[in-house]
Length: 216
Image 1 (cartoon, rainbow, N blue to C red):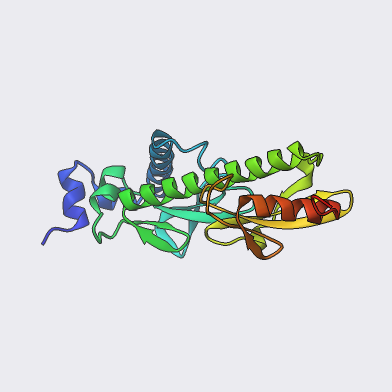
Image 2 (image 1 turned 90 degrees about the vertical axis):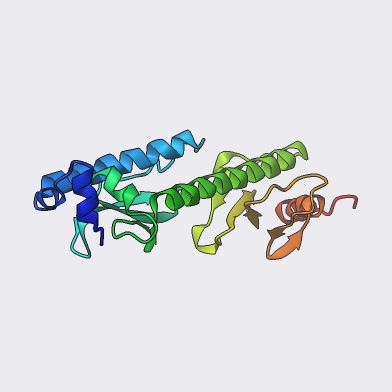
Protein backbone atom coordinates (compact mmCIF):
# COMPACT_ATOMS: atom_id res chain seq x y z
CA UNK A 1 0.00 0.00 0.00
CA UNK A 2 1.38 3.42 -0.98
CA UNK A 3 1.10 6.19 1.61
CA UNK A 4 1.52 9.97 1.42
CA UNK A 5 4.82 9.48 3.22
CA UNK A 6 5.99 7.05 0.52
CA UNK A 7 5.03 9.56 -2.18
CA UNK A 8 6.86 12.35 -0.38
CA UNK A 9 10.04 10.33 -0.12
CA UNK A 10 9.85 9.47 -3.82
CA UNK A 11 9.60 13.19 -4.54
CA UNK A 12 12.71 13.79 -2.41
CA UNK A 13 10.93 15.18 0.67
CA UNK A 14 11.27 14.04 4.27
CA UNK A 15 7.65 14.65 5.22
CA UNK A 16 8.11 13.71 8.86
CA UNK A 17 10.92 16.23 9.24
CA UNK A 18 8.86 18.97 7.58
CA UNK A 19 5.85 18.33 9.79
CA UNK A 20 8.03 18.36 12.89
CA UNK A 21 9.17 21.92 12.10
CA UNK A 22 6.52 24.64 12.46
CA UNK A 23 8.54 27.06 10.37
CA UNK A 24 8.75 24.61 7.45
CA UNK A 25 5.03 23.87 7.71
CA UNK A 26 4.24 27.60 7.59
CA UNK A 27 6.65 28.20 4.70
CA UNK A 28 5.14 25.35 2.65
CA UNK A 29 1.58 26.52 3.32
CA UNK A 30 2.38 30.08 2.25
CA UNK A 31 4.19 28.88 -0.87
CA UNK A 32 1.21 26.68 -1.74
CA UNK A 33 -1.18 29.61 -1.28
CA UNK A 34 0.96 31.73 -3.59
CA UNK A 35 0.90 28.89 -6.14
CA UNK A 36 -2.90 28.73 -5.91
CA UNK A 37 -3.27 32.46 -6.55
CA UNK A 38 -0.82 32.17 -9.48
CA UNK A 39 -2.95 29.44 -11.06
CA UNK A 40 -6.07 31.57 -10.65
CA UNK A 41 -4.32 34.49 -12.34
CA UNK A 42 -3.33 32.15 -15.18
CA UNK A 43 -7.03 31.26 -15.53
CA UNK A 44 -7.84 34.95 -16.07
CA UNK A 45 -9.14 35.80 -12.62
CA UNK A 46 -9.10 39.51 -11.78
CA UNK A 47 -6.87 40.07 -8.75
CA UNK A 48 -8.15 36.93 -7.03
CA UNK A 49 -8.41 37.06 -3.26
CA UNK A 50 -7.13 40.63 -3.04
CA UNK A 51 -8.27 40.67 0.59
CA UNK A 52 -6.23 37.60 1.48
CA UNK A 53 -4.68 37.79 4.92
CA UNK A 54 -1.59 35.97 6.12
CA UNK A 55 -2.17 32.39 7.20
CA UNK A 56 -2.48 31.42 10.83
CA UNK A 57 -2.04 28.13 12.64
CA UNK A 58 -5.21 26.64 14.14
CA UNK A 59 -5.49 23.65 16.46
CA UNK A 60 -8.47 22.49 14.42
CA UNK A 61 -6.22 22.13 11.36
CA UNK A 62 -2.88 20.59 12.37
CA UNK A 63 0.00 20.83 9.88
CA UNK A 64 -1.84 23.57 7.96
CA UNK A 65 -2.33 27.31 7.89
CA UNK A 66 -5.76 28.91 7.65
CA UNK A 67 -6.02 31.88 5.28
CA UNK A 68 -9.05 34.15 5.81
CA UNK A 69 -10.16 36.12 2.77
CA UNK A 70 -12.76 38.68 1.81
CA UNK A 71 -13.68 38.34 -1.85
CA UNK A 72 -15.68 40.08 -3.14
CA UNK A 73 -15.76 42.80 -0.45
CA UNK A 74 -18.20 41.84 2.28
CA UNK A 75 -18.02 38.09 1.57
CA UNK A 76 -15.75 36.32 4.03
CA UNK A 77 -14.33 32.84 3.72
CA UNK A 78 -11.21 30.84 4.39
CA UNK A 79 -8.81 28.38 2.82
CA UNK A 80 -6.98 25.80 4.91
CA UNK A 81 -3.72 25.03 3.14
CA UNK A 82 -1.56 22.00 4.03
CA UNK A 83 1.97 22.81 5.14
CA UNK A 84 3.65 20.23 2.96
CA UNK A 85 5.32 20.67 -0.45
CA UNK A 86 2.98 21.46 -3.33
CA UNK A 87 3.84 18.24 -5.16
CA UNK A 88 2.60 16.29 -2.13
CA UNK A 89 -0.65 18.27 -2.00
CA UNK A 90 -1.27 17.71 -5.71
CA UNK A 91 -0.29 14.06 -5.32
CA UNK A 92 -2.99 13.70 -2.69
CA UNK A 93 -5.79 14.20 -5.20
CA UNK A 94 -8.51 11.59 -5.64
CA UNK A 95 -9.22 11.15 -1.95
CA UNK A 96 -5.73 11.78 -0.58
CA UNK A 97 -5.15 13.11 2.92
CA UNK A 98 -3.68 16.45 1.84
CA UNK A 99 -6.72 18.06 0.27
CA UNK A 100 -7.20 21.82 0.53
CA UNK A 101 -10.23 22.93 2.54
CA UNK A 102 -12.29 25.85 1.23
CA UNK A 103 -15.05 27.13 3.52
CA UNK A 104 -15.12 23.80 5.33
CA UNK A 105 -15.26 21.65 2.18
CA UNK A 106 -12.21 19.55 1.17
CA UNK A 107 -11.08 19.77 -2.46
CA UNK A 108 -8.47 18.12 -4.59
CA UNK A 109 -6.15 20.82 -5.96
CA UNK A 110 -7.49 20.86 -9.53
CA UNK A 111 -11.11 20.84 -8.32
CA UNK A 112 -10.43 23.83 -6.07
CA UNK A 113 -8.83 25.79 -8.92
CA UNK A 114 -11.91 25.03 -11.05
CA UNK A 115 -14.26 26.07 -8.23
CA UNK A 116 -12.53 29.36 -7.48
CA UNK A 117 -12.13 30.21 -11.17
CA UNK A 118 -15.86 29.67 -11.68
CA UNK A 119 -16.58 31.83 -8.63
CA UNK A 120 -14.41 34.62 -10.01
CA UNK A 121 -16.12 34.45 -13.42
CA UNK A 122 -19.54 34.60 -11.72
CA UNK A 123 -18.45 37.60 -9.67
CA UNK A 124 -17.27 39.47 -12.76
CA UNK A 125 -20.57 38.69 -14.53
CA UNK A 126 -22.52 40.10 -11.59
CA UNK A 127 -20.40 43.25 -11.58
CA UNK A 128 -20.85 43.69 -15.33
CA UNK A 129 -24.63 43.30 -14.90
CA UNK A 130 -24.62 45.87 -12.10
CA UNK A 131 -22.61 48.36 -14.16
CA UNK A 132 -24.91 47.82 -17.16
CA UNK A 133 -28.00 48.50 -15.04
CA UNK A 134 -26.54 51.60 -13.41
CA UNK A 135 -25.42 52.96 -16.79
CA UNK A 136 -28.92 52.42 -18.17
CA UNK A 137 -30.48 54.25 -15.25
CA UNK A 138 -28.02 57.12 -15.61
CA UNK A 139 -28.88 57.24 -19.32
CA UNK A 140 -32.50 57.72 -18.30
CA UNK A 141 -31.64 60.76 -16.24
CA UNK A 142 -31.04 59.25 -12.80
CA UNK A 143 -27.76 60.68 -11.41
CA UNK A 144 -26.49 57.61 -9.57
CA UNK A 145 -22.96 57.77 -8.18
CA UNK A 146 -20.77 55.05 -6.72
CA UNK A 147 -21.92 56.05 -3.24
CA UNK A 148 -25.54 55.38 -4.27
CA UNK A 149 -24.93 51.69 -5.06
CA UNK A 150 -24.23 49.43 -2.06
CA UNK A 151 -24.11 45.65 -1.90
CA UNK A 152 -25.99 43.79 0.82
CA UNK A 153 -24.17 40.50 1.57
CA UNK A 154 -26.78 39.38 4.09
CA UNK A 155 -29.52 39.53 1.44
CA UNK A 156 -27.43 37.92 -1.31
CA UNK A 157 -27.47 34.27 -2.36
CA UNK A 158 -25.12 31.73 -3.91
CA UNK A 159 -25.84 32.89 -7.46
CA UNK A 160 -26.75 36.56 -7.02
CA UNK A 161 -25.73 39.73 -5.22
CA UNK A 162 -28.31 42.13 -3.83
CA UNK A 163 -27.67 45.85 -4.20
CA UNK A 164 -29.43 48.84 -2.71
CA UNK A 165 -29.78 51.77 -5.12
CA UNK A 166 -30.45 55.14 -3.49
CA UNK A 167 -31.55 58.46 -4.97
CA UNK A 168 -32.83 61.53 -3.10
CA UNK A 169 -34.13 59.58 -0.14
CA UNK A 170 -35.65 56.75 -2.19
CA UNK A 171 -34.20 53.23 -2.23
CA UNK A 172 -34.65 50.20 -4.46
CA UNK A 173 -33.40 46.68 -3.78
CA UNK A 174 -32.13 44.81 -6.84
CA UNK A 175 -30.84 41.21 -6.85
CA UNK A 176 -28.46 40.71 -9.76
CA UNK A 177 -27.65 37.18 -11.02
CA UNK A 178 -24.38 35.63 -12.14
CA UNK A 179 -25.85 35.12 -15.63
CA UNK A 180 -25.78 37.96 -18.15
CA UNK A 181 -28.80 40.29 -18.17
CA UNK A 182 -29.54 42.96 -20.74
CA UNK A 183 -31.72 44.00 -23.69
CA UNK A 184 -33.20 41.01 -25.49
CA UNK A 185 -32.00 38.46 -22.91
CA UNK A 186 -34.43 36.21 -21.09
CA UNK A 187 -32.56 36.09 -17.79
CA UNK A 188 -34.51 37.72 -14.97
CA UNK A 189 -33.34 39.78 -12.04
CA UNK A 190 -35.30 40.78 -8.98
CA UNK A 191 -36.42 44.29 -8.11
CA UNK A 192 -37.95 44.61 -4.64
CA UNK A 193 -38.40 40.85 -4.61
CA UNK A 194 -40.22 40.57 -7.95
CA UNK A 195 -38.70 38.92 -11.06
CA UNK A 196 -38.34 40.99 -14.22
CA UNK A 197 -36.53 40.70 -17.53
CA UNK A 198 -34.31 43.62 -18.49
CA UNK A 199 -36.71 46.33 -19.70
CA UNK A 200 -39.23 45.59 -16.98
CA UNK A 201 -36.49 45.62 -14.34
CA UNK A 202 -35.19 48.98 -15.53
CA UNK A 203 -38.68 50.48 -15.48
CA UNK A 204 -39.34 49.07 -12.00
CA UNK A 205 -36.10 50.59 -10.74
CA UNK A 206 -36.97 53.96 -12.32
CA UNK A 207 -40.39 53.93 -10.66
CA UNK A 208 -38.89 52.99 -7.32
CA UNK A 209 -36.20 55.65 -7.42
CA UNK A 210 -38.33 58.50 -8.78
CA UNK A 211 -41.90 57.66 -7.92
CA UNK A 212 -42.76 58.39 -11.55
CA UNK A 213 -44.15 55.72 -13.88
CA UNK A 214 -42.63 56.03 -17.40
CA UNK A 215 -45.16 57.26 -19.95
CA UNK A 216 -47.41 58.86 -17.37
